[in-house]
Every structure is written in structure tokens, then in C-alpha cells.
Image 1 (spheres, rainbow, N blue to C red):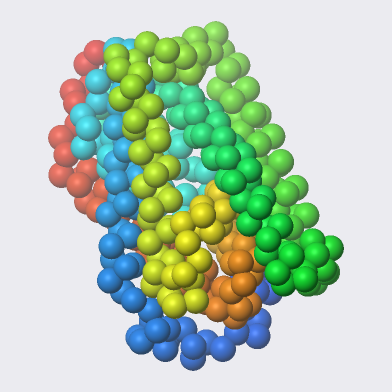
Image 2: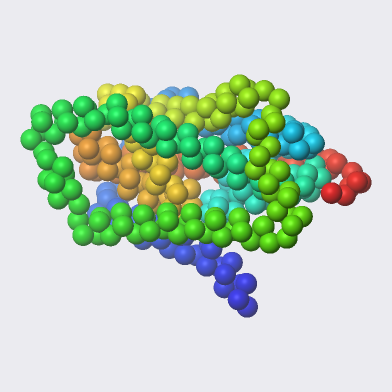
Length: 332
């Protein structure tokens, strides 16, 4: 019974949180405007042009993962790695953070890859990705300080005045999101300790964690790592050209919104729904976009990109169903 409540909570609580934030953001929204935006106001050409970059980001992740597994003596087929990544992202739309476990399970079942070693490489990936995002955030902040100061000078808006536009609920959402990010980090640390309770698992996990030191081509590994985030950024940035009110903001404004959105999705909700909408819309407002237009942008972009993730997951499931499993001997 306890496991049932725990499993249900992992699905229901993040969904309730996302629903609450989205309801608060769109409680006075004119839904007829969404239909008009999709039919006439939005440029679908730019949206479709962004899709290949969203797909390639996941392909680069699969390439990097395969490369990280190689020093451990594990050589999964590339198409299995790609499908596992597709499914992992789609599954996280239902249960946040479950994707990392699932893709290691897929390789264990189809490729006979040691599960604990797979988890170790995934943890290593998260450390590398976190480092890259933090570096990107620092560089972006340094580059955009003059832009922010110029914005405040021209508009006569002070930081205190801008923060004053937040309602009490807005502050509560920000504080709650921050707390949930800290709780998510604590949970991941706990899960890491959970997998380290036995010496054998600890050894496999350690091997996975440090496998990156022995990759055959560090330059290629770095290229794949950077490629992931470049594609993610382009997947997001090109959607700015879908709407007139964001098309003129420029690449740096998109980069600021992208970085802020990367931190927002740490909140454990399906695909960052709710916190991502709130954070990115706030950045757009900072750059002069109307509140309603900003809300429309994040709603349309997030929904369509989430549907793309779901479609890739369904493709991954179908492709795996047609993939022969590696023979079970020797069992690892």
C-alpha cells in the first residue's frame, strides 16, 4: 500500500503543481486567441524548422552516452541508445525524472548493459550538463548586464519597480519553485546513496561515473556535449520568429530566456510545465513583451515542443518493438 501511494504521489503531485501554476497564469486568458494564433498569427514554417534541432539534441545525447559506455566494455547499438533516449524523455512527461532510470533499464533489457554502470554514466552526464548550463548562465549574465541597465534607464523602470509588478502569488510561485529545486537535488543525492549500498553496485556506479576519463576521443565527447545544448537553444530560439512580438528580440534575449528556462525545468513537473511558463514569460516581459503575448508564446511553444517529445517517445517504443534483443549470455 505504501508503494502504491508513493508511486501515485510521484505522478499526481507534480501534475497538481503544474496545473496550479498554469491555472494561475491563464485564469483570465482569452482562449479564443489561441485558436487565432495557431491559425493565422503564428508562422508554422519557423516552428517546423525548429523540430530537427529538438530531435538532434536527443541524438547527440545518445551519441555521447554510447561513447561514455565504451570504456566500460559496453557497446550498445546506436539505434537502441537513440530510442532509449527518446523514450526516456517521453516517460518523464508522465513521471518527472523517471527517464534516467528507464533508459538504463532499456539498455539492460535489449543490449545486456550493466544497469549500475549505466546509471553511473547518466550521473556523469548530469554533472557535465549542469556544469555547461552554469557556465552558460554566467556568460549570459555577464553579457546581458549592460542590456538590463540600458533597459532600466530607457524605460525608467527600477529593479524594485519591476519586482513590484509581481503579485503575492507570483512571489509564492518563485519561492516554491526554488524550494522544489532544492528538494529535487536532495532526492537525487539520496537516490545516488541508495544505489551505493552494496559494494558491487558502488563499484559499478563508480566505474560509470569516471568512464568519461577514458573515452577514446575527448574532443568528440566535448563536441557531442556542446552539440546537445546548441541544438536545444536553436530548438527554442527559432520559435521566436513564429510571432511578431518576439521576432525582433534577438538571439541574446532568447539565450536569457533559454537559460532561465533550463533552471525552471529543474522543478519536478511534467516537462517543466508551469515553472517553465512562468519563468520564460517573466523574461519576455522584461524585454518589453506584453504580458498576454508572453503568456501566449510560452503556452504555444511549450505545448508543441512537448507533443514533439511525446511523438519521439512513441517512435522509440515502436522501433524497439521491432529490434532484436542481444542474447542473454553472458548475463552481467
